[in-house]
Image 1: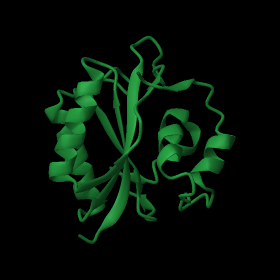
Image 2: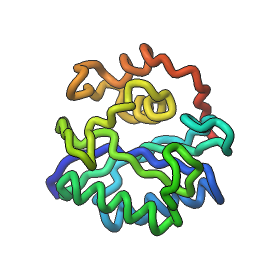
Image 3: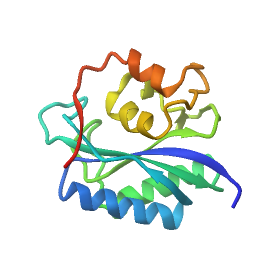
Image 4: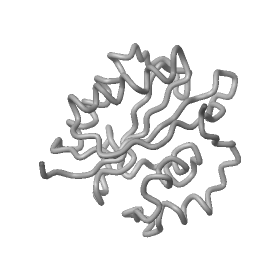
Length: 162
């Protein structure tokens, strides 16, 4: 299978978080492409709106033949199948699936920005991504993921989940 390697961030802070991440991985394997690798699962305090349960996050490396907007649609369909409701930005959610990177593509559309614009500022994204691909180079900033993590200003603790 040819295609592009995309890195997806899974996050959940409602319900059985571990089961929801597992379900998301299975759904994405069926709709988005081959799961090449999965990071450990990490727990962090909620980001944005702080008065909510902690998040469980995981990064997947997926080899996909889907174009970017079709991959976004697969991610959003996975969220919906997990019961995601969109009411408020940064609100608690059963599942969130974000496209962090899509090969070395730079995409700036009203519905999709890749690399994810907040990637360099969020430890809960950089820690699992650095576990998988520390030498991967951000296509706009031209720094490795390890370098971005070392410079990340986010103070939130990111710890491996039990």
